Length: 460
Image 1 (tube, rainbow, N blue to C red):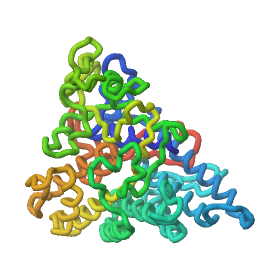
Image 2: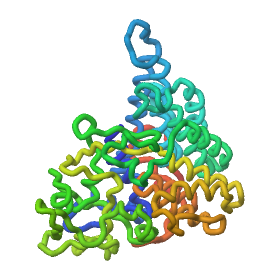
Image 3: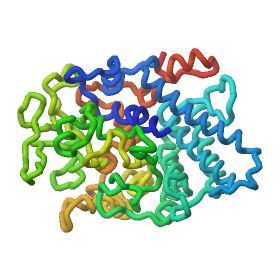
């Protein structure tokens, strides 16, 4: 489950958006053109990474089913366990519900399998899968622990379940054709009443030791020694920067870059712009002096947001802003110890604001503005007039931009663009795409294995 979330799911949620991109440069292997197809919305049902997403999601669901089926009728009375059997089952069902949510968002029309050894389950509509996830959350939420309970961190708590429910309701109109704004607001308020608070700094939720965050609601725990495979920094950064500035023992791939138009959403006085390495790259040597970092040719490395081409970008060694939202540990390993954030309070507050606006004819209410401003304020110096929106300046388009700034590289951009009807628009090196691209095709080999499944509309 840990490996899948970042290595696979991240790519399918970010690479088809206007946010993250994988240019083909200096001989980097492009997975047989997959990253280009994701960027340009030309993928097919035979794409390897789409198949891997499907298999990984349903493998995780299968693990959950295996646990539930095998513990359901076991007598655990004599065992010294930290939590009850009922809580164990409820937590695993919530992990299963999260993976069904991701599958619903990614593929929409999918089978629902609750037990092991079910053969050839049929396709369920998005509305049916939505109803299943909703009922699973509501039926199990009372059995869950809550923030502050013993051993709550990294577990699916009541607040995490409410956050998942809020996200489900936020995208209900996309998933089912029926809006659920009021229900999303109620779920958001349940989380906001549970004792979480915004961290002081915008990047505190992403520190190496982010288990100390007051804002994070649900994370996937990673540890460089005991829970590996989170290599966010390795995929984003040029190795010369990592070696010189952070003294790490691994090579940076400089695989993922940020598109220039997305980077330009940030004002220079917005501290969230600090999550990108841009401009002249330097480091402090052992004498305390600032030194230049050079590229492979020995020239000073100056990173530009500008990327001149998507394919065969041989001159692009220092092109494309490199994201470091997750703190880079000096002397660290490629497998990071930062826990990967899935739900945090800032998103809950922004979701409530969006729903209030949608209920009000896409016009900001004062409460919506206050919620967004509360999140935004910490990214600006005190007294900066740019820190605050008004009911006139917080338009729906600006809300989408602000969600982009706040939640960059957190796997929300694809859903956000779809919900705001922007996902199929043209952007850099991408033409306008078809409506059916809002969901992925059922992988070809999955269809041939299970004849009860039906391909999504628009795909062969």
